[in-house]
Image 1 (tube, rainbow, N blue to C red):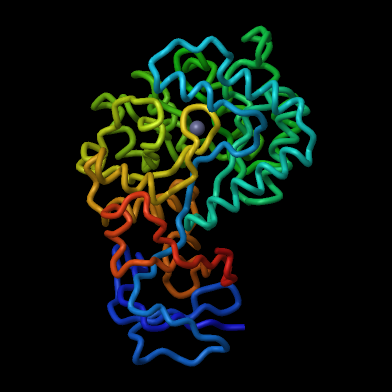
Image 2 (tube, protein in one colour; image 1 turned 135 degrees about the vertical axis):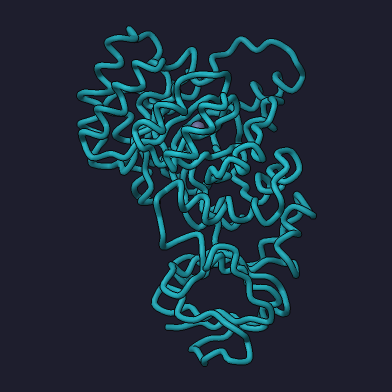
Length: 381
Ligand SMILES: [Zn+2]
């Protein structure tokens, strides 16, 4: 089964790096890109799609999500936007609701969120645990996440479980909980932040995870300066996520280690916080990804186009840089070479835009510009 998408006004392959082809065609076959080039030279295929002069880009790689949870925190958001104190329990609310939910309730919510992400052009999703915070509920969260993605991350070290002793909880995260979760996870993550896990605790978590074959990634330097980025670099983490408060030494560590800086501007938007400085990272030669951080507390968007527009408007990335950051950048943050670009042999994850040029994603924020989505060569949106 092959599909040719013809009459593409602008095809962004990101292969090599910033590759684009005007008046192009793209052939998808057996789940991968079989051919890309000038429309006039396109080979025949079983089915043909007319792009009508519109732009085609790689499917978005959203490398940071927390999608396995139950409950509702919209009142907390409303209170935050109103500037009024809100006494309810934040993440503890989500943990209690998640523990109380049935597998099918969690599965249904997850399916809804994944479908919404697909409709907005995301074809690869990383999904973390972190709202169970018990052996049973963390393992369950990862088992459910693994039903919808291969990019699963064990985040037992999200916060100390409500009511638990911090030292005992850390031992659980690095011991029995890790043992139950590791079979369902590719990555290990830790929220290294004041009020969550300090540098020593984060080091213990990453060491234990790596010993089980999980690859480190770190929630780092979101709310203030801290040791998270340096730890990520030291452990050879695939990504340090947030990177809002960085010292010069942190920037140097990212540049020299090759650890990707994953920026999550939806969080700053949804919490009215200062944005990280993308230009500083890019100038230093750091690889930058942009992802959503879709979660019920600090940022409940699953829209990569929205986050791309924020990256351009609020973090001073160019439209080209931001598009790269949500495709190849996200792929780099997940150490994937088969997604995030449309070179021959890449996974056939493709987005057709209702626009002649991908700059429209930032130029027309909030407008539904995703006309069609293919994942593994199949239409999913
Ligand atoms: Zn997060």
